[in-house]
Image (tube, rainbow, N blue to C red; front, top):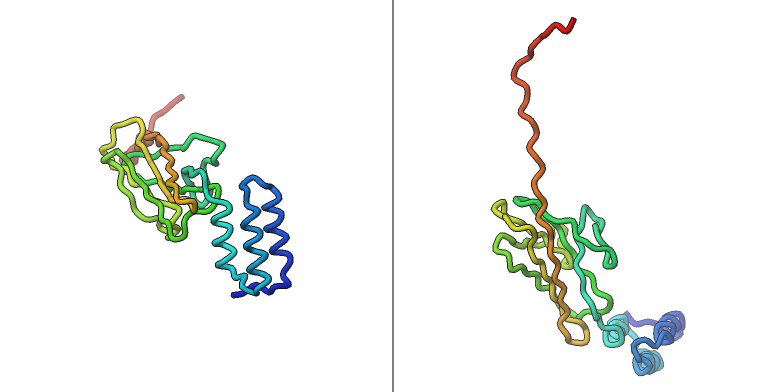
Length: 180
């Protein structure tokens, strides 16, 4: 879908990003203006230019509880996983990743296995921790390729949380006693 040449708001937004001048991207603004002049400014071309202008420089892992992140990038630590259960983790980046890039999740712990996130979100992973886990923590890593071509990696030590004690057995009898 082409963006009309008269759509100045998009160019204004891009200009504001460029004015931050943190990424030395004046040449990308020139490319956008030239495409707009020739009526060739499409959403795909805008995304391609922005990927070049703002590549991801950092990746980090957060643990999710429901749909909410349990930690944010500036607020560690990750809560952990109970042996014999699973946890959902998600990665975040601070810029653009390579088009079509998929994350690579790994752990050096043999008791950790990975399953795609139940909601199908490719930024998330379900980590299953075997009941046999005896360590205090397990390493969890994610790698993704930035739009600049560099590989970004984050590794977190995920605490192994002791299982809660089982509930007491159900009552099987009743006793009556006199107290006075």
